[in-house]
Image (cartoon, rainbow, N blue to C red; front, side, top):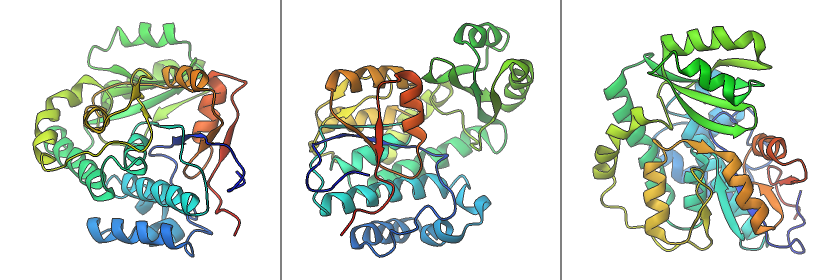
Length: 303
């Protein structure tokens, strides 16, 4: 945990979907900034985010429509609470997958409601385009990248969507092909399986949806960020509101390259802190670069 008043400015890492578990909000309910953030999110979405975060059940919390909203609101609430407790303005921020939306809101590029509307637009348009259960994503851990590419050559409908580490990947595309791919690579993997998502995120399947997503969000006027954001596509710094918001929309079709993000983190040289539940990004970052230590903001600041 960071000491609120004395710690130097950090680069913040915002986790994405998959970090949600019942009890994740423990200790935060009494913090005004967190509670206000969750209240706004619940009012805007009409979903019982706080109840699901406190007591579950896990199936509800990880449901397609609730999970990304819970992760977004929780991470933003944590950020606002820590800032209110005296944490310095970040040097920069990165987000893994939809964690980039949390970074957008934390940096003041768009309000929380706009990021929630982006999530809703992606869900609505993906469901209309692909239906339920037809598309998805799979994870592969401990398989060399060359082996993944060799296997993908037999499945032209599948794409490498996340490069999370030297041997940590996700693949997007039709579920039947994903199941065959997992079956082929699982014996040689540390872990492999399907992710609890129903869309082929971070791949070209989503590209056709970008014009409609952009139209849905045409009224959003991004503001200049309070600190730079790091693209999870290629690690470049995004220093204007327009560039950051454009990246947020395009990110659903852009692959995630956490190794490129880690290279940027090393170049910035600031302390690192994960702003959300769990230690997902601490693990990914140290997997990519063993000398990078990531602190955690998941526990409330000391009063």
